[in-house]
Structure formats: C-alpha cells, structure tokens
Image (tube, rainbow, N blue to C red; front, side, top):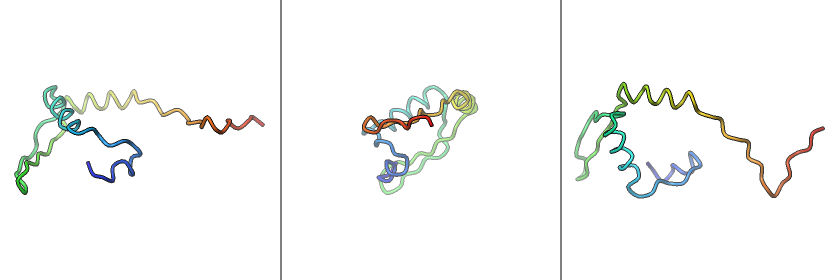
Length: 82
C-alpha cells in the first residue's frame, strides 16, 4: 500500500498491521499461498498468489456484490421529479 492509495481509491488508509493480519488469515484459510520470497534491503518481501479455493471464494463474493447506493448530501435536497 502506498501513500497514494487513499487518493486513488477514496478510502482511508489501513491501520498499522492490518494488511499483515489479513494476509495471515487468508493464508491460514487457504485462500492464498506464498509465490515468492526474497530479502530486499533488509526487509522480507513476500508475493502471494490466489489458490484455487481462494478463486472460488472470490468469484462467489464478487457475484453477490451489490452496487453502492446513490449518495444524497443532507445539505442539498434531492432533485424533485419533473
């Protein structure tokens, strides 16, 4: 995650450690597997790949995705029907 993430996606940055906690849970549950591991500049770099089980779960989750509701600002009334 980079400092540009909130600007690109309009979301709050993740809390410290949240990415690692989520990756550990996904690894434990078999959704991802380690694809590559290297030490770069003193810190470990790990790349993950989606497993078959993870792909099935992701496809199921995406098929149930609900489009976001239209945002109406409380300071501006919705346009009246014409």
